[in-house]
Amino acid sequence: MSVHAKEILEQALRLSQEERAVVADGLLFSLDKPDPATHELWAKEVEARIDTAERGDMERVPEEHVFAKYEKR
Image (tube, rainbow, N blue to C red):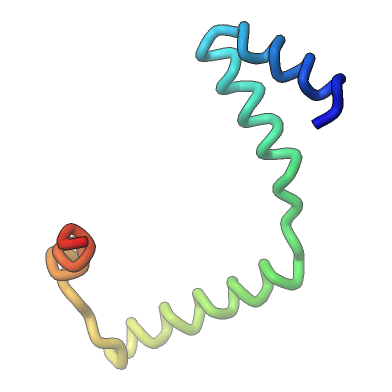
């Protein structure tokens, strides 16, 4: 980490919790550069899953079963 980055971090850590949250959100947002091709693929996948569910061709699992599976870990 550069000296400049360390100084910025030290200054940011002196901010209030709310101000740090705003800064963190802004930094994370700046890193999230959506890829249009990936977005298009996900949109098609979501539509296909919705169509499958609406046709009744998808096995449905009660949410209690799903959550129980992960609570055991």
